[in-house]
Length: 274
Ligand code: NAP
Image 1: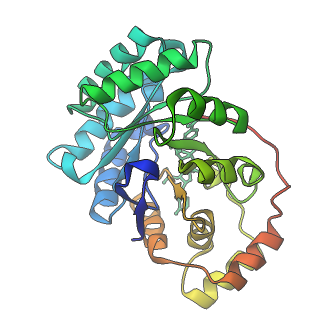
Image 2: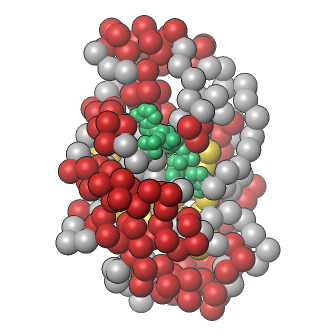
């Protein structure tokens, strides 16, 4: 599994992690999948207070019980809660559900109606009290990112978690370069298009040549930049195992060029899920 520094935190985090959206639908499989993922080095676990209205954080708590120190644990505040006091309360509720005393990174789920400066002040206060080791943003476009960096100062925004898969490479235009410029980690979500992954002859060819699968090649492509991470969600053990094995695959320049041509960066619409 390839590890790299998570933005300005410098913490070594695996390039492939585990998403948890909709995991409340099958608690038993979710816990087993998350545990298997941890065994295989998928120690970055991404959740949110919004997921299952808190139920997914409780599932994550069960999965990481006794293993907290192995995990790079990320949760998110719901934007409508993201006032100064509301962010603190939301974080404390997430910590209770997750049965832990700290988050490794705490994100604003998307830009909302409350002043960003207030959310950031709350994040910094939580960091001072040791409740969050770092904080970041999610679904911020380039202008939103610049505003966050302007308010927080350099080296404070740990990551921007954004939609990124082969059929939606919109972040590569200005957002990814801006994140790289500011040293902000880019965590790509929905790497399989939220379950709508479609293979392609180029992925199949590369997969065959490398003894890998098309999905593993796709994941390796999504983490080819030094600032990027990806967080596929999988509740089936076979899926977790396939995704974890992608963490050892590094594509050649020629393979990247062929995938780039097969999935043009300009194609696909911009869309936010959760
Ligand atoms: P995704 O990871 O693109 O796709 C998940 C789907 O792919 C599930 O149906 C899963 O099936 C399937 N899958 C996973 N690995 C597979 C494999 N190796 N082979 C075949 N199928 C496989 O979708 P996502 O859940 O939207 O995104 C991932 C995570 O990103 C979320 O769970 C969440 O943590 C985060 N996210 C964040 C935001 C945000 O606004 N910040 C938005 C969306 C997502 P099984 O479950 O049956 O294994």
